[in-house]
Length: 137
Image 1 (tube, rainbow, N blue to C red):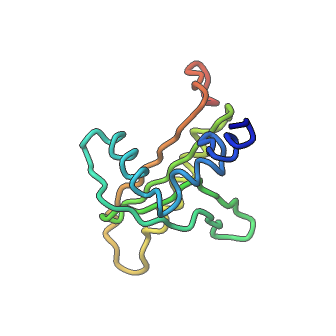
Image 2 (tube, helix red, strand yellow; image 1 turned 90 degrees about the horizontal axis):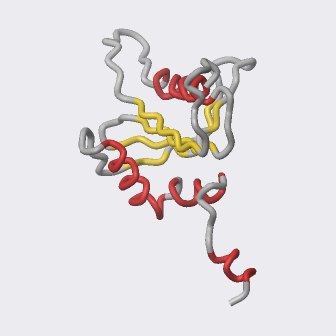
């Protein structure tokens, strides 16, 4: 077997394409559920997921948009964002917080509302370490 055949046969999960193919497709939903449950250590148990639109526009024309790597909802209506970041990104914490505002805002209702929000989980898979001495990370 030559190296060309090997490279065509396997998907690198550390690329956007590979990560989304591995965790962001219906056929591999069980992998994502298992991965999320392993991170939750039994505090919550995800039984099923529905994949949602990964592209979100701001409320106004001038607002920034957000494109999530994987965005889904569990059977309780809680939203889960999974982001994979290979290279060091200076403002990853801030970007993650910004991304979390989209599923929070989606829960807003017109009229009478008790402001009881469902959980929003943001899972970041990083290939770098935060510099704890700096507020930039």
